[in-house]
Structure formats: C-alpha cells, structure tokens
Image (cartoon, rainbow, N blue to C red; front, side):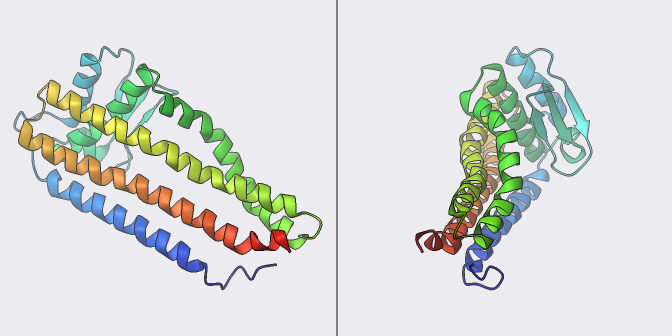
Length: 232
C-alpha cells in the first residue's frame, strides 16, 4: 500500500491549492476594483437582470436577492436568478457584469444549451462518485492483491469531478459571452464600462479553469500513488 500521508505527490495538491488561491484572489481584486465604478445610467444590477430577461423574451424567471457574498447563481430547476446582497442593489459595473452572467445561464437554459444540460445531468453522478471514490480506493489498496479493480473504479469515480469541471468551462465562458453581448445590445453599459465588465467576467472564468487544473492534479496524484501497484 502506498505511503499516502507523507509523500512527494503532495506537491501536486499544493500546486492546485496555490493556483486556486491565486485565481480567487485575482477575481476578488478585479471585482473590488470595478465595484468602485458606478454605471453612468445609474441602473441597479437587479434591474439590469430583469431587463436582460425581458429582452430575451424569457418569462417566469424571477430575480431574487439572497444572502451571502458573491453567492449569485441561476438555478435551472427552480428557474430563478439569485443575486447576492452585495450585487443585487449595487450600481457598480462589477455587479452588473455578475448579474448579466447569471442571466446568461438563464438564456442558455431557455435555448436548451447542450453543455448546460450535460452539466446538470452530471451533478448527481459526480456527487455519488465523489462520495464512494476514496473508500473504494482505500479498500482496494488494503486488499490490493484480490481487489485491484476497486482501485481502478475508485480512481475513475474520482475523475468524474474533473470531467464535471471540464464540462463547466464552456458553460461559464458561453454565459459570459452572452452576457456581454446583451449588455452591448441593450446599451446598459457604454463601451468603456463594457470593457470593465469583460475584465470582471474574465477573472471569474479563471476560477473555473483553476478548479479544473486542481481536479486534474488530484487525479494524476491518485494514478501515481496507485497506478503502478496495479501492475505488481
């Protein structure tokens, strides 16, 4: 059984954590920078969200305020755009960019955007796989000579998290593109403000790239730790 708790492969975990921390810090600093810039029309982010949904002919999708800091989301099951307290009533370019992004997901849902549907379908599978992956790997490692298949299945179950992150990338990038296109079309933001919103959404997208890289590094670590032993 590999010596799991003190091994050189922890460097992969450290790299993943560092990348994720940098991405999180970058998006927060970018958001704060343009949070100080109010849009020239004086529109609140929640009002812009409703305008976007109206212009997209999406009816029956309410915009609500929820607690938390940057907990904004669109729920494809309840068909609700939820904006955090920090975003909902703000008139900043950052807040409008975030609100527009969530509306981008609502538009994806309305047009049956395939990657969004695929991501939704993967959620229960990934949740189940993430719960059983480590137990399967540990059981397979302890009884390795008789249960190498368990380790293989466990690693594949863990790899579902990486697959989910990969599928998430086009969903998030596409939502941002849709958001920026709508903001330009309805002229909620002028060209200068639109560029600021683009920087906020680009920074946010990097967090999803970082999450995918971190997941991949974790999968690689498991393969290094247990892959060789399957050939013993």
